[in-house]
Image 1 (tube, helix red, strand yellow):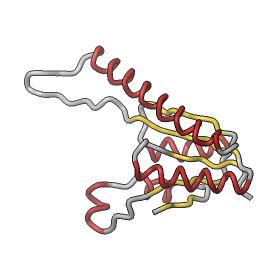
Image 2 (cartoon, one colour; image 1 turned 180 degrees about the vertical axis):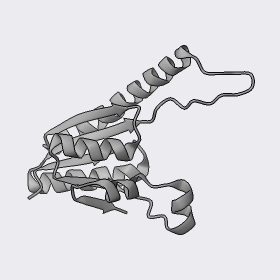
Image 3 (spheres, one colour; image 1 turned 135 degrees about the horizontal axis):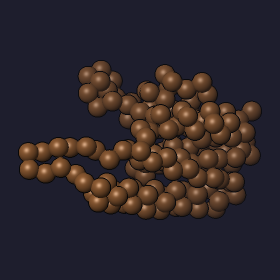
Image 4 (cartoon, helix red, strand yellow; image 1 turned 30 degrees about the horizontal axis):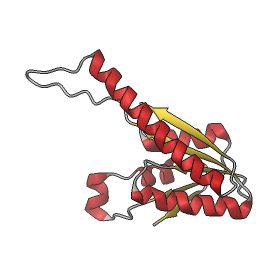
Length: 146
């Protein structure tokens, strides 16, 4: 049924719940897995006495790329220990929800498995929810782990 599962992670403890569930499901179904992480664009913050330059933007990108590579490598190793075929994708300069929805469509994934805080009301409105955005934008089924 689900032959290609997209597994978003940001490396947090919460995201690990979704990763663990997705890998267990993939193992049971014999599914291929693509692990994805996205890194936000460089924040443009202008102050009275300081404006970011090209060097700061490049350092930001290098740090994000290195962190993403380490995260994806460790998650891929976890999948491979379970005997699961896994690919990895890092999407730089993109919000997580947009990267997840676009990757699911372009890679031909037929399920997204991700975790959520399960916030409600004003907390969700103030803090935002990448999971909520994925749920409302995705044309692919989404399994939310809480």
